[in-house]
Every structure is written in structure tokens, then in C-alpha cells.
Image 1 (tube, rainbow, N blue to C red):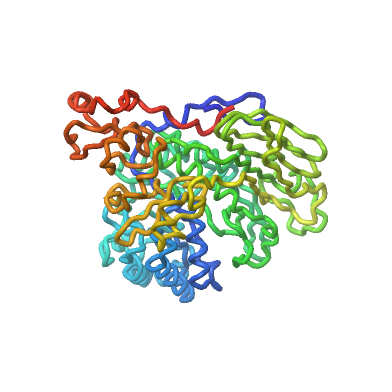
Image 2 (cartoon, one colour):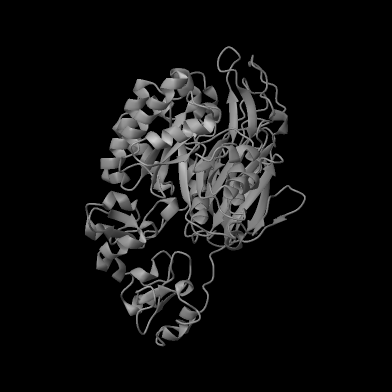
Length: 589
């Protein structure tokens, strides 16, 4: 793909997303949720958060929790909601022990039994995410925790051996990749560091890259959970948390991290977004409105990051679909930037500028997601930069100065999108290296009779479900289908292969366009089979007799080229037997 970053000396030519992935396997997307910021939560708050995350293609919350009794109560509420609320059907959770707090809450000998008690209560829940037969359990830190035993590995092995449910241990240890072989007890590791300027773990630091971690883990037969994060800024006073730094967010960090995931020789088995609601470190991907934030975090007031969650959903879909981005059916423009120049001097800040702020880029970043060619206009302080973009996704970057900011998109001399952002201040009162984030999108397609809504809201109305499309970015315009046996109403791309036999027949009967998403083996009609592509964009083909898989309709890429091509029904359209064309690349110009 071509990544066009306006204002840079050269364009960057990259491989198309479809060819990035040399090795493909099951991939999963989680997001880090700070239970320590849920003191006032009730079940409705948990439901709201889960719906928002699920809409963005996220499969589970990693519940970062401490040992406080009230935190355990909030976690109980979260599991109850995930287990019983139809609106979040299929959404999962797992514990992520904050070891910095757990280690201070118990003696070394008491720590293991206390943590076992949490696992025994929660990991056996139907709402816990299970991988390879084990309930995932994770951590923040813990790489030197020995539980009073001979060494750290022995401590974690004790926890695995003594919990009632089988667990899949996926902790985050702050170690060098060369030390990974010292921890055979873990099933995989989570690499927390995702930013540019972290002196103790910059993601590109020699010896500490994603590739270094992945290679070390694969050598031990362990899985890799990588982190994707949009930025990192915190400004706590010396008298408090004493954290005052900017670890990055420049160069479209959120998008760049997703691209890096799909550039590795083998895709990481897991990606954990950092974070959903850590307002104190600015890498939250929701709104701080009506959600508890740490005392003194005035740098998040007025800075809603929900648009980053919507942008991330586009790339999460590609990560989970062999690098293929979903077809663009809605024009959308994302834009984000910091609220003052990096060299600005704050007039009322006693803490001083954050560490590494000089590394920041004074840029307005934009991501154009277009159905067809258009012109993007970015205005700053009265100067407008206009850039022609093509269909698909284009990354843009324009240097900023203090002043107004607005964006618009024009096609055929008609303005189709426009928005006004936050003014960039020349002289802020306090230093703020958080990001203003926004997006603007065209009205959703409502061509299907039932309209365009989140499919899960129609779980009790089969007829309306089967006549509607999904409105969420991760499943935009996918047909809603009703899955019998408690499956509810789901977007077509979310239905598991095994569940297609439970889908009401007339949910598929009205669909005639060759859009991807339906597993070929789920289709029984020859006419429908010959019009379909599966979720990997391979054409469906119909057999004269059943293929080796047992299905009459099968994905072209799944049949045995040496022995089964001759079994393809000759009455299927001839292009059903040719490789499918891919969606537009992730970025192009």
C-alpha cells in the first residue's frame, strides 16, 4: 500500500495488507479496562462499555484490577453483565492482575493463594475468554514475583497447577526478550510497550522490538500478545504520582501500530489495545464524560477519544481477516492533534514541561476513508492545505501553528463532510500533550428495509433483524442475521461458521450481491453459492457431489486443487473458479 503523509519529504511505499501476512492463524483483539476507575460503576455502566467495545470489533476486556474488595465487587458485576445481558451476547472478559498493587497487598506466601481465589471465582465463568482450552489470565507486571518460592517461574507454575479451572497464562512482564526462556510456566507474554519515546522500552529499541519478542516466544512454543496504543501523556505532580512525560502519539501512532502488527512475519495471536479508560495516561479510547477519572487529570477534560476506537475498528477487522480491509461503504474523515505547539510556554504550570515533549511533532493528522476519489481540505490558522485522495484509506499529515482548525471533504465540487476542531493555543495555562480526536462521516446507508442499526438491538425481533443492516463501523452495512438457539441477531461477519446452520433461512434469501462474509460451507443453495465470496474474499464454488470437507458449497481456496477442481459444477459462473480480487489496500493515494 502507499501511505501518503503530507508534509514529509517522500511518500512511503509498503506492501499491500493482503501480502503482509506470511503466516496467518486465529487472531484476537482485547482492550485494557482499568477496574480501579470503576468505583461508581453499576451494571448499566458495564453494559454501556461492553456494547461500545463490541461495536468496535473488540472481543474482551482485560480487567486490570487490584486487590481491593470493592474492585472485586465491580469485577463480579462485569462478569454478571457479560454472562446474562443479551445486548452484550458473546462479549468476554479476563482478569489482568495489577501486580504492582497485589504484591503490596499480601505477603509473599499469601499472594499465591489469594490470586488462586480470584481465578477460581472468575476464570470458570462462561464469560471468561478461553484459548486452547484454558481461561486466559493476564497481568500488568509480575516478572519478579516469586510467591515465596524458589524463583519467579516456580511461583507462576504454582498458580497454574493449583487453580480449579485450567488457565492460559498470558502475563505482561517488563523483561528483555532474551530473558523469556526463563519463564516456561507461562503460555505466552504480553508486550506492554507501544510508544516512541519510552526510554525503558521504546517499541523500536534495538533488541526490544515486536519481532524480537515474537522470535523469542516462538522459539519456546509460546504465544505473543502485542500492544496497540494511540498515545501516552501524563502530567501528575511531584507531590502526587510524580509522572510527567510524553511517550508519543506522533506519526499516526494508532494506525502505525496496527500496520506493524500486520507487517510481522507471523501475525501476533493477540492484540491488546492500551487502553479503554486509563485517563491518567491519555491513551484511553472512549469518552471521559460520565466516567470516573483520577483526581487532577484536567488534561482529559473536553478530549473525547471515542473516534480513535472507531478508527481502530477498521484496522482490527483487517488484522482478523488476513489484512483485508472491509469494503468502504461510508465516507469518513478522522483527524487528531495536540492542543498547543511543543515549544509553547505554559503560563500557570508549576510542574514544567513533560519529559520527551521536545520529540513531539507539531502536526494535524487525518485519515480519509473514502468510497471514491475526493479532495480533503485541512485548514489551520487561515491557511488551507488541499490533498487529492483516492478510494480506500489515505493518511495525511499537515504541520500546525497556533490558531483555528477545520476539515472538509469535497467531491465533484460539492462539500460532503465538514467539521471544526479545537483551536490550537499559542500560550496554554498548563502543558497538555493529550490529543484532540474527532471524526465526521456521511449518513449511513439504509437501503435494507429495516434500516441501519446495531444488529444486537434486534435480538427479540426476527423479522426486523432479517431486514436490517448493521450500523457499527466494524460491521458497517453487513446484513443482520438471526441465529436460533440463543444466538440473537448478529452481523453476518460475526456469525461463527458452526452457527450458520442455526440461521433463519430467509435471512440469507434476500441477499443477492456478492459481498464477503458468509462461510461458503454454510450455504445450501447452489444459486446463492455461485454468487458468494467467503470472509477471506475467496469465491464460493458448488460441487457436482460433496467436496472432501463434506460441504456441497466450499471456498475455492479450501478445495484440493489437485483433485477437486473437476468436481466444480459447470453451471456456476466461470469467474467463480478464478481467484477473488481483494478489497482496497489499507492506505492508498
